Length: 377
Image (cartoon, rainbow, N blue to C red; front, side):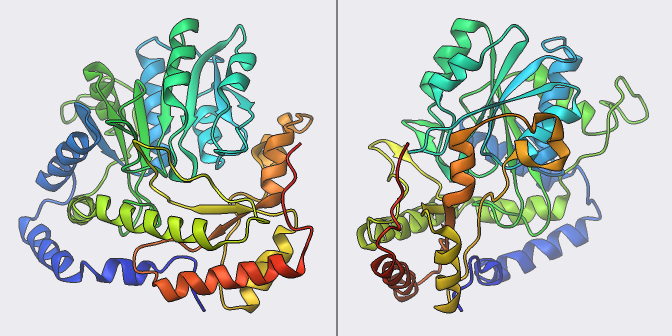
């Protein structure tokens, strides 16, 4: 069986280095908010090309803390509206709801899976204050277009970069386009810890300071609490592991890109394939997502051929019980994607032979399903 993601093999590459830093952290006696976390924050900020990075407990917390900091500083008010892609993971919407803000779902571009700038423009209303751009599957949203829209309408532009570590447009990486960005460091992400973790990036010193306060009980100084904060901290051991993996991130992203190119060259065009990045663009390839009108049958055929796949995401946000208040919403593009998308294996260490086996299994299915292509509407 070709696993969808082989985390054991991915992390065993660094076992000797992990053992070394484990001994270092253990012997330090300092396990929260110490030198390792501070060093990771500085290194990740430099990597993204921003002034500040704040390590937090997970990717959801990263988004919540950004929005809470904006509320604390008066740049947002309760019940303000945030534009969120309809086809993202539910965490993007949950962060908005957790802060007492309104979720407004917006359709994606079918070709890129990311926010459609025209749909964003059309969705802006009286209470709209934020555009939350999600770099879905590792490809950056159209940030120049979204930044222009945000500036023209006086909106805040934020990034959900949970899947896009190392992605960039031109010289600017994910995490350096909006006022702030939230990253997940969940183990399966392009830059993944060996447990939960997250990080916020920003060039705004005030925002970074408020987030640091909120993630540590609202306390900039021990036992002095300026805000009603919480506890969302990146621990020393995970930070030490992440410092090692950050050094290999670009090489790992290149490995994913090479696999994506092999898929693009070999897969039958009766499947709808993701676009390869344009010149000057780097796609992190967190996921390689094809589309088929017979997605479920394709998934079963691949499973029988020894290929594990996943669906990201089978039920859109507005059809989830948690968002039953949005149940009457019609989002045709989002709904179509939820019915058609299938994620194929893509990760460093996947051999050429394994990739070719996935290609052959997909093409065998396409050959016997003459109507397996995706029709655009």
